[in-house]
Picture 1 (tube, rainbow, N blue to C red):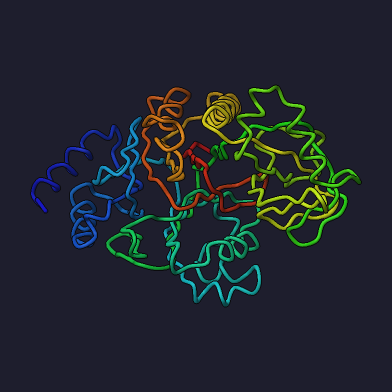
Picture 2: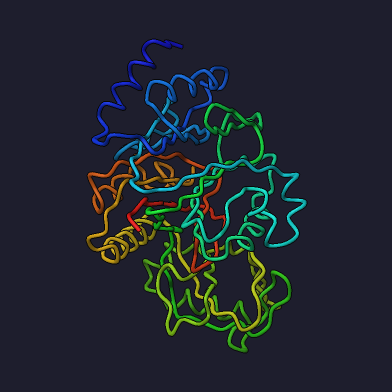
Length: 381
């Protein structure tokens, strides 16, 4: 590793920030830096004058409008967040096992719910139960969004790294509480477009949906597909998912109101379909199609909606976590998601990585997602 070259690069990057102080640094390293990660963090903190630094490892990196898939390298983003109150915390699997009530995480982290507007979180997928962690975190921080993702690393060895200031961890998670005069908003694009109409589940057992609208579930699914135009029927083959409404109190449902989960299979004779979730009777669902066109349409519409809702609000910068099943694998070309973000919000300081899972809110709850782009924006409160 060229330590002098890295130090000079960090100084130059700091010099490009048009602000008197750095508030936050986000760093993402490819696995080739694993042996030198601790030294890299120290050089960056010192020469870019970073008071709070966190991030994780990934084989794919995002910088500006570029997605660098499997290229190997290092991404550092510096953010000036006037009036922000930031606190970084680390958490472990052992703590999750103890998180019995809603007061656990505020006591452990020292961050009270009233003092945080939103969270960024990076998690090791191999040594931490991310689903259980997020459930307990939702109990403690009921209305605060969490954006982020699961680190990726050196395969086939189950090894990733998490970074917090000068420390390197190979398990657990790291999170950043964003409070004060800065908040987090964003876009969770699950890569799907709704098909057919919305339905109510009328008979459910565990992850098996038996009746939809008092009819066999498989029959409803089959009719939904058959009513599509021929070209869309072809697109739907092998690309069908289910969307579960999270907030039943909405008067009507739009893109972004559904939590998308896998359709695991169906049985025409019994009329039952199996899904990768635990839905409940009375819940509203809508079937979904996922492919490149649907994913592009979904992200474009959600970005435009977010841009419109923010109006003249100051956006200080962004973070993007994309599923490693997106990028070239889905769109057939690089940089699709990063370029779309820049088209709506650019020129925007943006950094991120390709994850093994993405974290973000649907409605007022945070979930672990797949095939998703999770964009967090630092905005003036």
